[in-house]
Length: 323
Ligand SMILES: Nc1ncnc2c1ncn2[C@@H]1O[C@H](COP(=O)(O)OP(=O)(O)OP(=O)(O)O)[C@@H](O)[C@H]1O
View 1 (cartoon, helix red, strand yellow):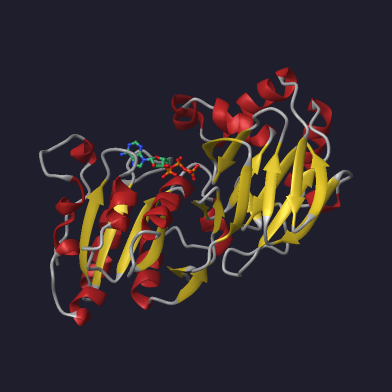
View 2 (view 1 turned 90 degrees about the vertical axis):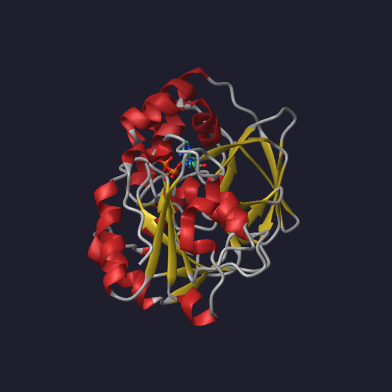
């Protein structure tokens, strides 16, 4: 077993170059050998990261005959580079991190003609995908899931060509995502979004959005193109959406004053957003979001420039390991 022990100091450059450091994951071998190889790429800066969990997962997978390599990232972008590398000869690329790290892997897979199966070892601040797929948290259960290799198609979306696994949006939520300083997010987790959200909601003017969904024009203040049922954690934004089904849904909110934002947050927390006044939920294949002025956008909880956005489903899904 080519096991690199989780090392909290590995974020410091030890002179080994990027993906190569992942050892066995880039060695040639028979197809049968490659299938048993698992490369875990872990983001040690993600919320709730625990090196000891990875150690336990590596040990358990090693005991079940897998060849496991572990790579701790040292900077943003590395997971995408590893996922895109055509020399990657593993059966499973397991991302230990939050939704942003998973997004990087999917983005990398776009330029890899033979991507391995994707597994997610959940950490992260919100980790909506983990809630969406009902992923286990305990090391033993995660290792068991990876060893079983039951997969589902992960149907992701594209916003201006950039993959999103969960959602792409423009409006007040994206403004909050843009405004949350990383240090605050690392210190307070989801609470950081609530703190900055209140400040943004009370101070912003907002902008009218024009959304065209499969030819229908909708005017609103917040538009969320979603693949996921959940939003911001376990909160249901769109009952009909599923990351493992093709297609997209659109959720629009007609108002974004501080009071209506509060109403919508309460409705979301109660799982009743789709029934709240001024909310529309519809299925759509092709969505554009534009505004007279540039409105901040976000994908999968990370800042993503400004409007206009053109959003559509990706043609080919990724295989993801599920419980
Ligand atoms: N070693 C690293 N140093 C700094 N940033 C990194 C590193 N490795 C990955 N990243 C970046 O950190 C971003 C956020 O990480 P991640 O999604 O794993 O955790 P999170 O922000 O706590 O969780 P969530 O996205 O679920 O809120 C990712 O977009 C990724 O590009």
